[in-house]
Image 1 (tube, helix red, strand yellow):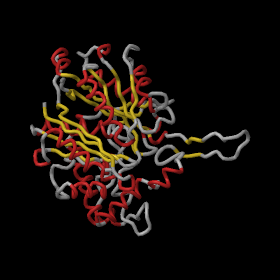
Image 2 (cartoon, helix red, strand yellow; image 1 turned 180 degrees about the horizontal axis):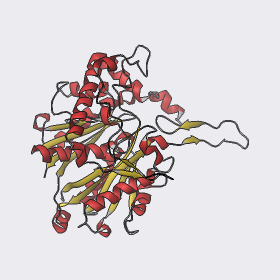
Image 3 (cartoon, one colour; image 1 turned 90 degrees about the vertical axis):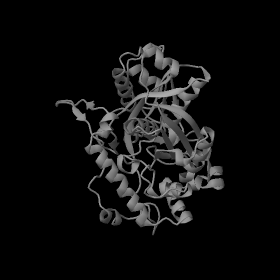
Image 4 (cartoon, helix red, strand yellow; image 1 turned 45 degrees about the vertical axis):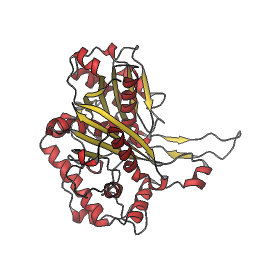
Amino acid sequence: MKQTYIVDGVRTPIGKFKGTLAAVRTDDLAAMTIAKLMEKNPDVDPSAIDDVILGCANQAGEDNRNVARMAALLAGLPWSVPGETVNRLCASGMSAAIHAHRAIMAGDGDLFIAGGVENMSRGPYVMSKPQTAYGTDSKMYDSSFGWRFVNPKMKELYGTHAMGETAENLVEQFGISREDQDAFALWSQQKAARAQERGRFDLEKFAVEIPQRKKDPIVFVEDEFMKPNTTLEALGGLRAAFKKDGSVTAGNSSGLNDGAVALLMASGEAVEQHGLKPLARVVSSAVAGVEPRIMGIGPVEASKKALAKAGLTLDDMDIIELNEAFAAQVLACTRELGLADNDERINPNGGAIALGHPLGVTGGRILHSAALELQETGKKYALVSMCIGVGQGYATILERA
């Protein structure tokens, strides 16, 4: 069976909601990221790409009708290169990468672009059609985030908890204090600030030029969601966002964000043929379902499954990238896995609480970040995992190449 390698990757700086990237169409955001990846790898013939697979959670606006194919064409790839868009909500980017991995293992291709895109700022309002002529039963939703057009049976069976409410459910079930959540959030901000200061994120991102009508282009360079100067006192002063007398706040949660990521993934044969230098090998992956009302616990079961497939344990992991949808969610997972809250292996360069969480992007971002971290530190294994809305978890294990 063929082996899969993450060879390279690139992402945009992450934009805050209604921030700098709000001016950029979603398909253009993906296209410029694909184009930059190819620019970084001039020895790879674009026509040799077997498929472009992108994750995207919205797909209601400019990301509609298979944004991966649209972006590939807009990026200048030959029309002979196909494209597929994947939607597994928060893990769409990771799913895209694993789709490429499976295709390589099955012998369906050797060279893939995988990643994701999300411009949550540009999520459109969506409205249903009335069931009858001149009917008044149309419904309208803001598609940027959350449930829309929910099946009544789903609500009866499992409820339709908002993501923040699922985090509060974990707080209640696992007895997680506000103080511990805020401490973890501060830790994420501090690690991300240190990574930014030493230029670590420069290995991941590229400058995005945004044309202006009568001015020079805006050159967007730095992740703009970060709050490096935050303090425990500031975090402690924030109100609960999702539940009266709750403890999940805007400060100990990730945000609504914009961005794109693209990874170059290759078989061992393609690595040799094109003279590539891979970062990491995909060892195993697993997806798991959990109760929707506590969706944030999903990484626990997914991680256990991925570790079992690889014949490894948590003790073997040198780096643990666990997406920070909410501090409460991460702490519930780490405690269930038997990890200390401040285990130094966890998110060494900060996570989504600091950087942001563009839904279709994060899975690809943390895979690339973990692969880079393995190379930088010379360590061997990384566990990369994330929770998924409506009750799932995804995990992937990487080995330094």
